[in-house]
Length: 222
Image 1 (tube, rainbow, N blue to C red):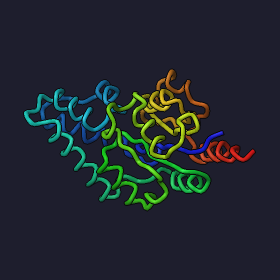
Image 2 (cartoon, rainbow, N blue to C red):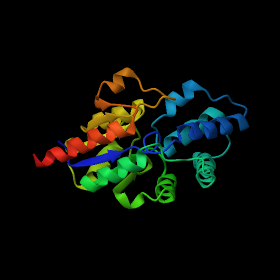
Image 3 (cartoon, helix red, strand yellow):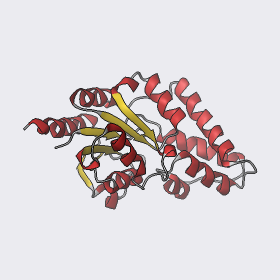
């Protein structure tokens, strides 16, 4: 049984992971560095200040981490305006259906500017009782901080929350928070088996995940 649902955003609600990779790669290339799978694994789940610091060090860039973050985030906001960040098939229905049964929150590694812009752009912002960016907590994923903050904002105990994730570090963060973990494995960036092992349910299909979430929320009244 569960009282609330906490969603990740990138890779769960919207197709955007490849754009972060594209922008990090372009930034590195502009500084004559090659950004590859090893770097992607390192930064996946990091908060914006964390990956910006990593990217700045990796590139040996002369500017600050704040400048690096601003450049990349500006690129994401442009991509959204250009129609390049779409809701995943079934994501809108998943958000709407779960919000009708209980409170929903967002726990995202994306910076606040991107979180707000994406939710407003797709007209789903009003469904969320709380949204938390990992830039607003002490540590990014795989630490549980962003999930614990989301549960606190909802006023629901973490163990009474369902967490929907796609990435290795996201799955680990949700499990560390004590939530019931639901996995939508990202086919482009497959999560590690040890991270998937924490999931109570896994499916690449948003419809199947929605059915599972509603079943857990409906079980409250039994």
